[in-house]
Image (cartoon, rainbow, N blue to C red):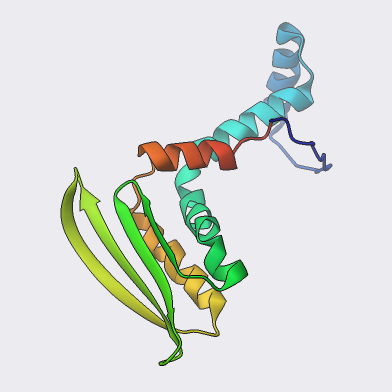
Length: 148
């Protein structure tokens, strides 16, 4: 599905030689410099996709944050149960990590239930265990980093 593109204007300082090379490449490829810069930035972001995994995990837990529903999900080698424990007024994040289909370890994190930012921060820390190149995460990254 095509999405509406919103364009913003940014001003950057770049090395003089880099500017000349961009201008030359634009000429020989017969492409606007703006297109070439967008392609380069998209490649840079994709090459650093591991930094987006935490944000993607938080977004996958949206029913917890938007509807106050418990969430249980598996993303490749990580299984998470995110639940509110109303009687004790805290959130419990239980997660299990697997490698090559074999259980490695699990852990629980308890957070005062009113602090949803702390829950998001904990999920982002847990995301370091997700295999960035796993089938599910690769698909989620492609969806998230789709600028077309």
